View: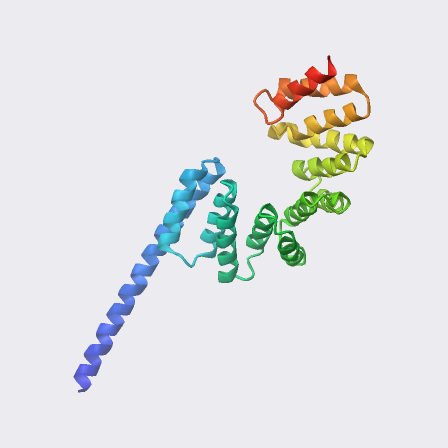
Length: 252
C-alpha cells in the first residue's frame, strides 16, 4: 500500500513538473509574440501587430500586459467595444494597472460613455505614482471636449501642458478649446505655440486651426499665409484639402 502511495506521489510530481515546464514554454512564446507585436505596433502595422498579440494571448490568456496591448491595437483599428473588453480584462487581472485604466477611459470616451470615462480618469489622476499624468489630463480634456464642455476641457489640457510643456496634442486641443469658445485671440496664441511642437511630428492640425482663427478675426492675409503653409508643409496631410477649399473661398 505504501509503495502504491509513493508511486502515485512520484507520478503526480512528474505531471506537475511537466505542467510547469509547459506553462513556462507557453509564457516564453507569449513574450516573443508580444515583443513582435509591439515592434509592429510602433511601426503602425496594426493588422500584423494584432495577429502577434492574439498569438501571445493564446499562449498566455491571463497576461494583463497582452490584454492591454490587444486593447490598444483594437483602439487604433477603431474597434472601440472590443478594445474596451480587453482593457477591462487587463484591469480585472491587475487592478493596479493604471495605464490600462487610462486607455480604458479613452475608449469609453470614443464610445460615448463619458461618465464612465470620467470616473475611471479620477482613479488615474489620483494615482500619484503614474508616470504619464499628462496623458490622463489629455484624456480628461478630450472627454469634456467631446461633450462640448470646452471650458473644462481647456483647463485639463493646460494641466497636461504644465506636466509636459512640449506636448503637441495638449497644446493643439488647448487652442482648439479656445477656438470652439470663439475666443480667437487666445486660440491663435495657443495654436501658434502648438505649431512649434507639432511641426517636427508632421502634425498639421494646429496650423489649420490657426489659419481658421485668423480668418474668423478678419485677418485674411495671415489666414492665407497659414493655409498656404499647410499645403506646402503637409501636402498629404489631413488638412491639406480643407486648406485648399478655404483658400478658394477667401480668394474669390
